[in-house]
Image (cartoon, rainbow over all chains, first blue to last red; front, top):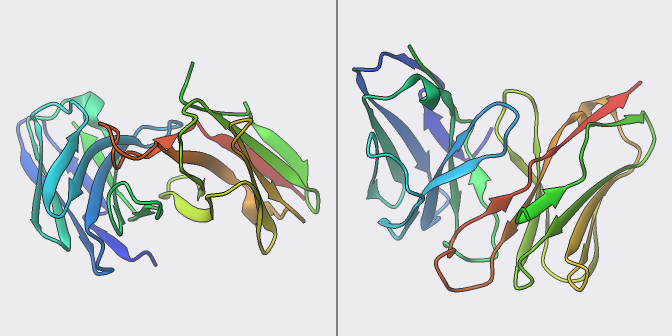
Amino acid sequence: DTEVTQTPKHLVMGMTNKKSLKCEQHMGHRAMYWYKQKAKKPPELMFVYSYEKLSINESVPSRFSPECPNSSLLNLHLHALQPEDSALYLCASSPLAGSNQPQHFGDGTRLSIL
Amino acid sequence: QKEVEQNSGPLSVPEGAIASLNCTYSDRGSQSFFWYRQYSGKSPELIMSIYSNGDKEDGRFTAQLNKASQYVSLLIRDSQPSDSATYLCAVTPHAGGTSYGKLTFGQGTILTVHP
C-alpha cells in the first residue's frame, strides 16, 4: 500500500464532462506533484505545488486545473478533455520541493476519454 | 541530447544472474539520483536513492554514482522473475533556477528475468 492515495482508480468520461481527480497524503510532505504518463513512456511532470502554492506549471493546457486546498490534499479538475488526454495520472509528494528527498507516488488514476 | 538517458532495452537476463542498468545525465550540477521500478499497469516505486559518489547497497540492489562521468547505474544481484519490470532513472537538477522541484526521468529500461 502506498502512502499517497489517489481516487478514483479508473475514470471514463466524455469530452464534455467535468470531473476531478483527488490525491491525499498524510506524511507531512509540503510538496505535491501531478504527472501524466502515456503507455511505454516515463512520467511527464504537469504541476508542482510547494507549501500549497503552485510553483511549476509545465505549460499544461487550461482544460487541466490543479488545486491544493491544504497541505494534505491535491486535486486536478478536468474539463473538455480530448481523447489524447487518456493516460495514467500520477500524484506524488515529497518533504519539500527541490529537496534531495525522493518523490513518492500514488497508485494513479487511469483516465479514458471517449 | 536528452537530459537523462538510459541504456536501450529491453534487457533479458536468466534467473540468478546480475542485471546491470545504466543511466547518464547531462546537467553536471545534478544533485540527487533515484531508481524507480514500475510494474506494468502500476505506478513507479522508489527502490534506491544515491547522492554521493560511490556505491550504495540495499539487499540485492546496488546503486553506483560517478559524478565526474555523469553516470549512475543499478545492479540487481541474483535476479528473480519478480524483478521483471521497467526501471526508471530519475535525476533532480542543481538547486535554484526554474527547474526547482522538477524530477527528470529517463525513458526507462525494460528488464525481463527468465526462469
